Structure formats: structure tokens, C-alpha cells
Image (cartoon, rainbow, N blue to C red; front, side):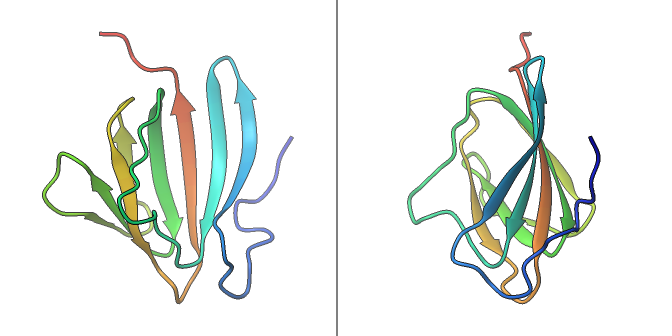
Length: 111
């Protein structure tokens, strides 16, 4: 299986983010997320059971972790490791250009 992470991107803003599963197996899930100005709803926080490693490939975004005072500004190439159960949210994505994310979900590390 193969593909291109920048193929089939929308040419105009859409109502919802687009999530595409690229691979799943052995407890690992890889997905492409395409944002066109979306953000997490007010008061909503993701709190996932798995670890997540995410990289922003294009566009820009603001990612907020609950234990941080301010959102992180992400530009292409910036990545973040989000431990399992760490509350986080997307404060903003660029409404003027497509933001493409690559997310890798992994079983929570046991330490």
C-alpha cells in the first residue's frame, strides 16, 4: 500500500476536519488529518487512552495541552508527543491554507 499525503486536499474550507486511516495493526494506528480552519469545540478536551505522536506537515495550528499556560504554535515540521490521557485540544488551524497532520497512535507506554 502506498500514497501521497498531499493528494486529494480540499481547495476550499470545509465544515469538518477530514480523518483518513492510513494503517492499523499491532496496536499502532496512523492517520492523516486535514484541517481547513477547524478547532476543538469550546470546553472540549481530547483525552485518549493511547500515546500519540503528531507532526504538522503543512499550514499552521495552535495545540494546547491542559497543563500548559498557553497554546503551542505549530508550523510545518513541528511535532509533539502527547502521552496517553493527557488532556489536549486544537485551539486553531489556519483558515487560509490547508493544514495536514500525520498522527501516530501507539499503545500507552508502561513505565
